[in-house]
Amino acid sequence: MLAAAQRLRRREDFAATIRNGRRAGRGALVVHFLQSTIEPAPADQPSARAGFVVSASVSPDLADAAAPDAVAGDSGADGVTSSGDAGAVPARAGFVVSKAVGNAVVRNLVKRRLRHLIRSHMAALPSASMIVVRALPASASASFEDLGRDLETALTAARRPKSREGRR
Image (cartoon, rainbow, N blue to C red; front, side):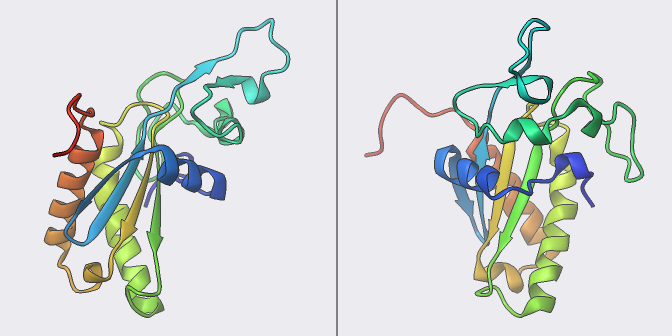
């Protein structure tokens, strides 16, 4: 299970990540990765929402979820720790599993597996980044190991910087 501060919940965050983020598909998954920048607001700027200034590449509603009291500096009940900076905004992840994957039981199984697999990658992600993992219909029959391998390779590919050369 992911900590509450590490979950994407708002539609705007999902949409921003899918529209503006880097996409990489591997096997039964598609990963959308958006690296955003959120900086602490200066003390003399009263207009900053929840104490943070959000860059132009991120939805302004992200600042609502980035309230400093939503981030725990020590490990929570699930053992997830923040990067040591009490004001840092953690990386967040969300999952999209459509009805094409299967019935409710299968969809929930796939979501539980993906949540468990992404947990180990969250600490290595940059602060304030967002990830959306979209499960394809093949994920219903994929084994846990196959999902883990697909997630790792897709996440690595999505985080890789764009090359200067275009596709050929």
